[in-house]
Length: 246
Image 1 (cartoon, rainbow, N blue to C red):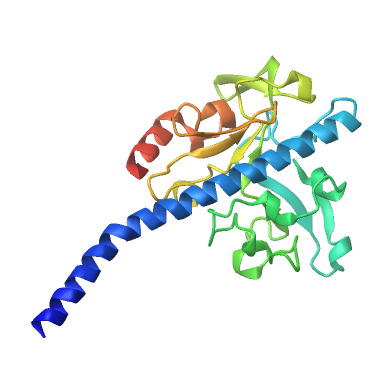
Image 2 (cartoon, helix red, strand yellow):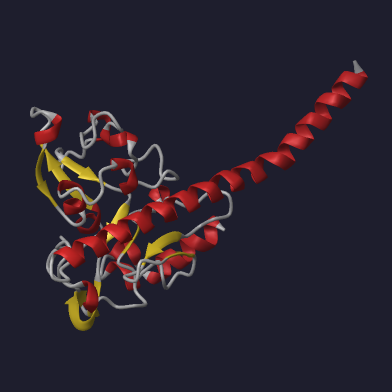
């Protein structure tokens, strides 16, 4: 009996050592897959711009229509229609889907962001996307499909005022985008919905206008540099959250 207890204790000790490493490995794999999804979106945005006189899909976020929600809405849908006619309006990078630049719905979601309203499964998954799952319906906008990436092309040429602060304006053309500010990134809507927050990886994957993707953990990158004046993304808030998650 004593020997059995010793063996059990050793196994428990080994598991306590290995489980954090396994979680970190799983999150690392999810982070890399997420980066690949953003690279695919970047390639599609370049193709879109090439075929539309350098124009980008129009962002829903404007100087008067701010907040994180304005960056991650993708569709409004009518669930009474057949799946191929379900989309009634599209926002942000929605045209990449409706105009067939991307034909796999899962690309618009980070696999690390599960069991939230920003997951692929929340919108009925591969056989029924885009479609709203009643379990995740937002009562303020019950027909909305959200994705786990925010789209906000930031201009290197213009500025906009949100509240009392100034930020880069909205870039309408790919060539106008600010080279050092993201064009699309993981949703940073709230701490509990942050895609990369487990296994020591508190941060966000960010897509830039040249098509490159980098994983950023600094609070400056996770704040107004990417979200305009949304108070959910105040620099001090994100500095605290990132430090907690690390």
